[in-house]
Length: 466
Image 1 (tube, rainbow, N blue to C red):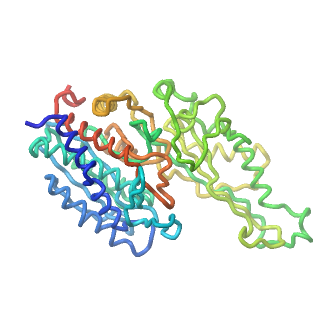
Image 2: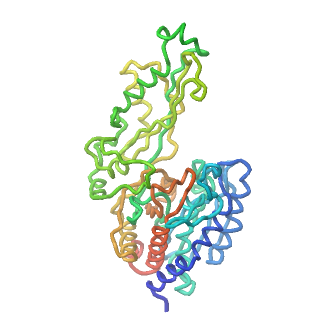
Image 3: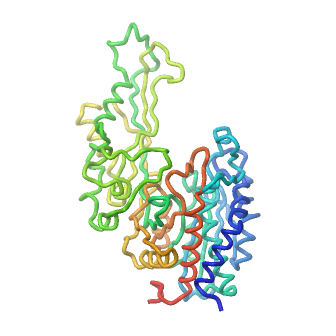
């Protein structure tokens, strides 16, 4: 008769004896990027030739669906229902990746070849998100083997192939299949831990709001010698506009953008003592940057950030002696559920006008990914934390939302499920650039953590059964 310890031991052997590395190598070898023209067949091949047969071996009923939005990758839905009365977990992941960027990778590395080096595996999708959903499914397979093919619970899965293009079509798909996808909780993986060595549960994600700030004054450039000092320079006006939005030390000055009432007490409580870091040298945590009086964890998990993603005036690669006709900055706000993005554009317009910057236009203002959050003390969150701590033998950090964005709002809005995100990566994994990699130690821990959760899902004591 199988045991919980036996299930974890199976998962550990699969990892330690090279089974997981071989599985991940096959996944990475399929160049399923949704950001490169001509790769569209690879999106379907990833699901049809690799994921479908694996799921069917585990007893899932699998269906591939065309995306509701033409031109975007297909969506796989799978169900494994033993008894509708049993607890049901919904898994989510995405098999599409960003562009390979092969020419930019370090010597000896290829985005579509899994390459082990020291404590990490290099390859596109190794961290985002192939490695992460592979961990969760491999853990499920180990538990099924230990229990003789019966889990004692139900599992459903949505695996999309357009996440790196904004999850286009996912909302419409989940809405149309809400009855079939009904579950008690979403338990899935994406994004980074708070630190590489700290097991983490996130209960939501920050949203993203974008806009262009534009100063356009004339049809073409004019001679800098004849007109410099006489005619308005759009780049200077735009620079002044940005300086009114954020001060020299990163404090947001458009205060109507910020969480109403500050960081909520429940968020402050769960973030007390929460570490942040492990970026592998990609960036620094600058203590004096951002909102004064907040900890680093509160700044990225409980507050909003303003970022200038790109700005341009003239032709930077080939400047000419002219006063440019226009200047443009593409800006982003990462925001928590404690803010109202519907007010962002109006607040910005009032702010600019109050500073005499009527020349600055706001264009293309829109939410690209809404924020989401489940209460950090939700029963399913605490159940997952207890299960993981039992498996790993140490504290699991809960955060109210990840610092990045995920489509959790889709599942909250249409399925009403609590969100339990269990990331297996870290913020230095270079997931959208060259040299993307998955750290081996967190991957192994993730496999054990999910084996424990799958086992516990089939035991008495889940929030559904108490």
